[in-house]
Length: 213
Picture 1 (cartoon, rainbow, N blue to C red):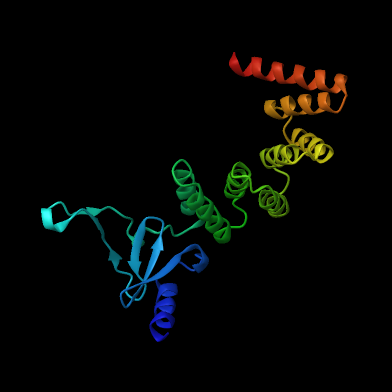
Picture 2: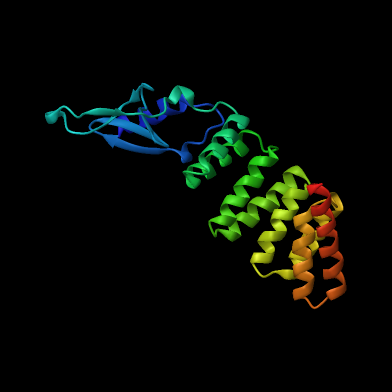
């Protein structure tokens, strides 16, 4: 117990102030407490990076598996955001954690909130995605892309009236959001309002045509 308590205290000393311990995996290796962050492993009480190996030393095939040095852990919100963006194609869960850390470091970083909500939406975690988007509106205001994404989410949750109002709010902030006009056209058609559907589809085609010229 003393080893774990001391190591966790040392772990906090090695981390930036904004980084939560909850984003790390802590385990015991022999008599040491080891921290796993993504693909990297390091010793909690010393900060020493631990190499991982693959192969069989008996036949001379042992080689080092490359990892990330904890000294390279992002130190600020923008760096965490950039890490999240880089991780998205290969490790969505790690990207989620990176965006959460970016938001913890800078609650006004709108792009991190938008990307976090989008990833949660894509993962089917709709209720949490909605919480992220609504918290973003409170923290950052009525950004049109944020409102558009929230509208798509509400549409997918079959909350058509709320989706419609949110799409309309997005267009009040930015009338040039072509995809928003398209989604509104489809939604109005489903709601049995053909005139509104035609109006938004016409606007969508006009915007797409002007952007391709």
